Length: 81
Image 1 (cartoon, rainbow, N blue to C red):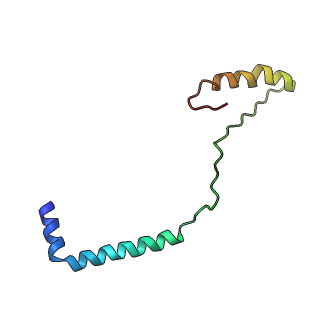
Image 2 (cartoon, helix red, strand yellow; image 1 turned 120 degrees about the vertical axis):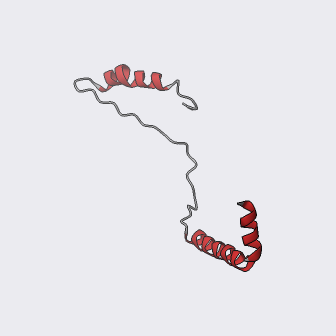
Image 3 (cartoon, rainbow, N blue to C red; image 1 turned 90 degrees about the vertical axis):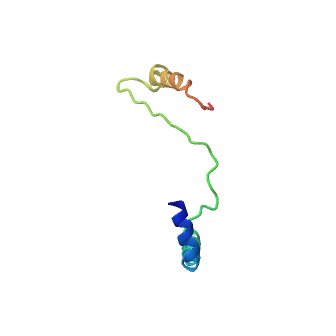
């Protein structure tokens, strides 16, 4: 199979060079049309958890629900804070 491919490439080298030139041309054309972000975002991803418990005050929700979720998430790998 590889010998046939090499034989084809040697016999039809103009066709192979033309196909390579076409790929380079169309690839560079697509590269110029590709959207580029000039100022990429460097901040790490942030997860915000919103908790809601009907009938509880904000302080109760924080102590009973939010702090428990924060404690559970503290064991996640690569967590900064």
